[in-house]
Length: 231
Image (tube, rainbow, N blue to C red; front, top):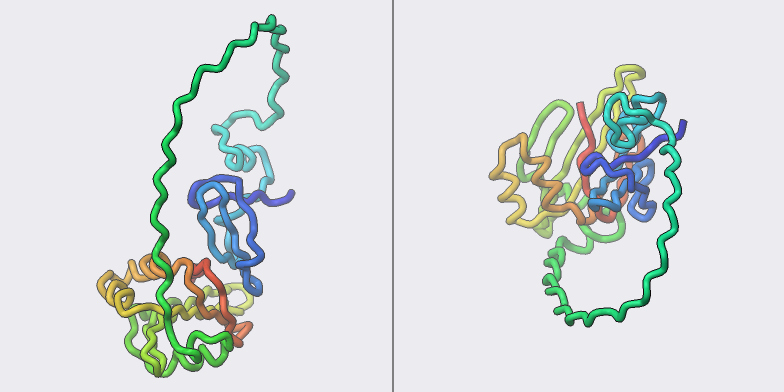
């Protein structure tokens, strides 16, 4: 049976793909109901999709209570015709004050130089690795380092590895996103367990570099920054 896509945040079925923000074999999934979105690597991921295989799966997909029938809605008895009512002049409507306009969100800061943020992704990757500043997380399958270009632009570099216990073809991914000095201070102030969520919240719509073990040549991704599962 075909899969049913569902937002893992609000559990709405009003979900689709945004090809303009997808990259290589990563698909950008987007929820129209709540605005949640993320780049999704479909290998081993099931948080955005439900495969309806039986009655219980259908109940979960469509929000029915356990044991509720998954059948078509029974026909409704026709409603008797209502006699026509004489037209009534509409009541005057009081003018409505315009809703206050929210101030525009702060623009993204201008970051980096022509080398570390230029369109040449390979040159940008090489430039941002000029100097290793410090490690924020150092685990076997997950790491977050702060690196710096010769122009003093800082980058948060994320490494994730997901073990393939069947074929030994482990999935390794690197992401590099420019950050400000203030954002670096916020990342250093939180605990190790909170670095991942804090970083995603700070740079959610910022352009970032990505590469994988299978595709070692880096490329730029516009918006939708998220950190892939690991371990």
